[in-house]
Length: 407
Ligand code: SAM
Image 1 (tube, helix red, strand yellow):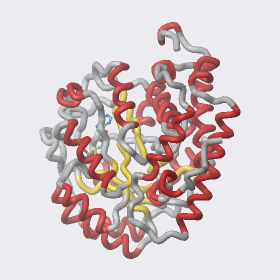
Image 2: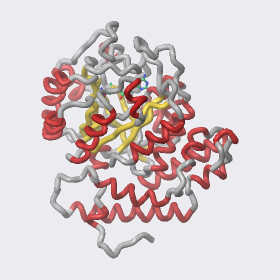
Image 3: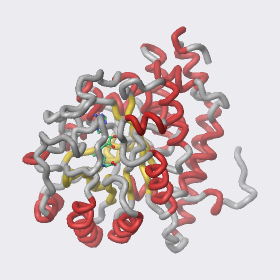
Image 4: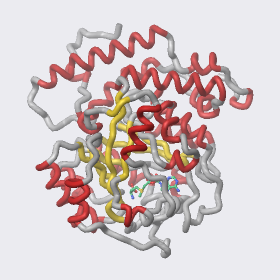
């Protein structure tokens, strides 16, 4: 592909993105195989080993990609017709794999204590201006039992890195809801002891969201991201190995971030056997050392959503509310660029302002806003949970007869 500063045409993007009719036919072939293998799987007793299954799947789909990788640089910079073509390709791929369905989860932000000190995050331990909280179990129970929107199929528990909240609040609540409700359960609780990951899984959680933020070791260290990059990667690998559906991600537009760092991070993320991946626009957070830095470029962030979809078609890619902080149409545009997970915020309003990743004044995605965005993107809410869908992707390598080959 050409040097990014020469601009890109929709034809170049189309070429780089492999979207010939032949390729789409092959994608459809994979989808048919998945259905066949899924129905085979239903007859096989559960093995408990299913988190790495999407790996084989993604590996095969990636044969569609052109050998050279530079298309991602052009794609990230795309505007005008090139951007329209990029997003249209991403939408088509999402539709090939998931139909028009967007997964809908609810998030409860259960605590804002954090032992980490990430320089971009308002919940960093050195931010003394924040009123710290841990929700009472009874409050979390009430949210789940009394105000769960009908469209929600998954619950996500999110907090700063706070092992106390994990042990005393999240674990017992998950044990209860896993017994009582048919909901996919995921958590985003940071880097903790392996023993705690195991306990969460035994309690009934199936999805773990743990972002890399950046895959560049030096940038990771300078930004004081959690622990070390090596430890974060080790945690991800442990979670994948022990059967979790793992979703990771990056922050785009971090101060001084280079395009090469972004590409290297994308490469690293693709090597990790993930079920999903997110891209968040950098927002200068109040009460952080980066508060006066420039916010990320929303178009580049949304182009990155399309790149994730196109390079890993099976990934669950969320639209994130921070996109709406950049522009009020950001969320809908993320769905148009290939995202397939939306999140309804269920944190009781009294505590929302203190769960301050960026600014005290937040953009809250209510059920009404989420459903409207899904409709505006020409999609519909999925009746299936994302962790259930990710868990059911079969290991083609182990289940397809050896003679079955690519068309
Ligand atoms: N503490 C847990 C962990 O380390 O995984 C939970 C996640 S943390 C509370 C929430 C996420 O918000 C981070 O992983 C990071 O990607 C994102 N975030 C925080 N501050 C941000 C900022 N200023 N701009 C963009 N994303 C930010």
